[in-house]
Length: 348
Picture 1 (cartoon, rainbow, N blue to C red):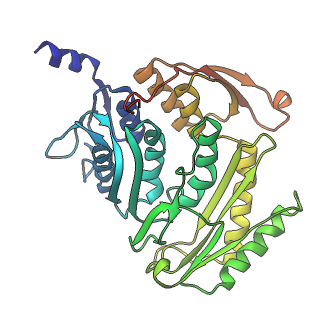
Picture 2 (cartoon, one colour):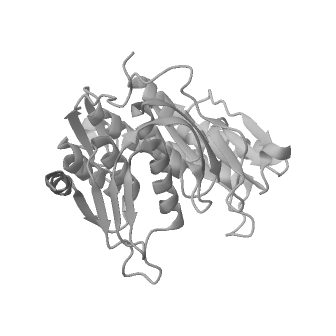
Picture 3 (cartoon, rainbow, N blue to C red):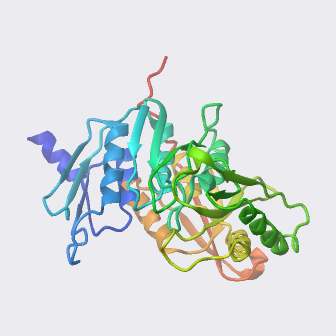
C-alpha cells in the first residue's frame, strides 16, 4: 500500500491530447508515472487516435514491465514506464501518420536501452505532416554524433518507399535528397533545376542528387518530393522537405513549383536555425548550451515538461536583431544538463 501511494504521489497529471509523444518519452526516461485525462473529451469522436494508440504500443514494445491503462472511451491514459530494453523488433505504424512520427520518439529513447535497438518500421515514409526518414537521417543522426552517440550501427535505411495513400513502406533508415516514385524520372530533374534557380543565387556550390524508385521498392502510390539540407560552418545540419499530394487528395503540384518552394523553405530554416532535438540532448547530457532560436509553442511546452519531469530549467535572454546580425527578435537559451546515464545497459 505504501509503495502504491508513493508511485501515485510521483504521478504527473495532464489534460488534453497535446504533446502526447513528448510526455510519454519524458515519462519513460524519468521513470515517472503519467496520467492524461480529457483526451478530446469534448469532440464528436473522443479519445485517442489510431496513430497515438500505435505509438503507445511501440513504447510498450521497446520497454519491459510498462503498465498501460486506457479507459473504454480512450479519453484517459495511465502510463507507468518500465525498463527500456530494445533488441530486434518490428512495428506496423498507423498509415494516418508518417514513419517520422514514430522515429522521432525512438531517436530520443534508443541510446538508453539495455540492448541495441534494431527495429523495422512499416508504414508511410513520405507525407505532408511528419518529417520523412530522409530528413531525420540528414539532421538527427549528425546531431547525435555531436553528443558522442556514434558507431557503425548508428544508421537509418529505407528499404521500400510508401506514400500516403498506401502503407507499404518498410523502413529502417533513409537515404535520398530528391526522389520520384512511379512517375517519370524527369519529374526529379525538373525539381532540381527549379531549386537550383533559387539556391544558386546565394551559393554556387550546390549538389542535389536524384533517387528514382521503381519496381517493388517504389511501393504502390505515385508521387515525388524533395529533401534539401544545408551545413553551417560549425557543422550544424539544417533541412527542409516537401512532397506532392497523395493521388486524389488536394490540388496537383508541378515539380517546378515544389522545387522552388522547398528551396525557399530551406532558406527560411537557415534564417530560423533551430532544431528541437538539440534542446533534448542539451539538458540530458552534462554539457552547457547556448543557442538562439525563435519562440514557438512547441518548444515552450517542451521546456515546461523538462521542469516537471526532471526539474531542469533554461535561462532565457532576449537578443536583439543588431546583436544577432539578423532580422527579428531572438532568444538565447542556456542550461547545464543533468548528466543522464544509461542505467538500463548492463556493464560488462
